[in-house]
Length: 148
Image (cartoon, rainbow, N blue to C red; front, side):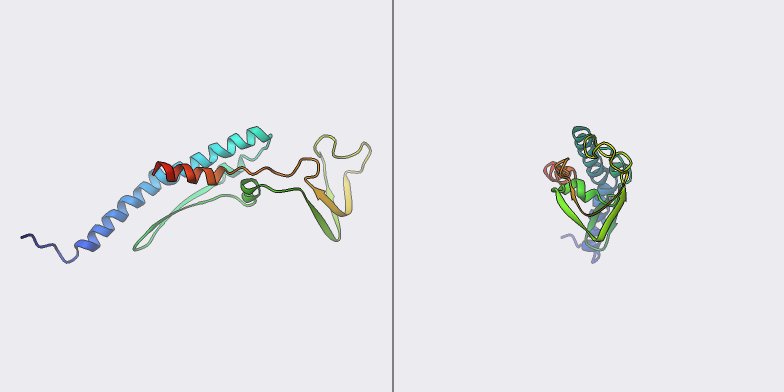
């Protein structure tokens, strides 16, 4: 009969977590980041967006504790606006909105209109239809889960 060392379970748990952590750092995490970047690049191309800061500034972090390994990708601020999309909506000022719009999309500022605008409210997205959802991150996670 074979007798196992009393630390067998702890040693096995540590070895499994070592393997999972290594895979998270070298394979799974980078793949998640890469596939999401590819999805965002395709989305940006389809919609004419210059949003390469999203995938260029994304940071991968892998954390480990005694019983788990966590993969986290931190995308820059406002990424969620593209991931989830934004419906056209009205922005109301308190008391007014004031902004400079140097180069609005074609047809959105009447000829001769001032570049500095003040308004009580702005119907954001009324010309563009808002921002369509990218689903870049969610689709990358779904693909990764299917691969695993």
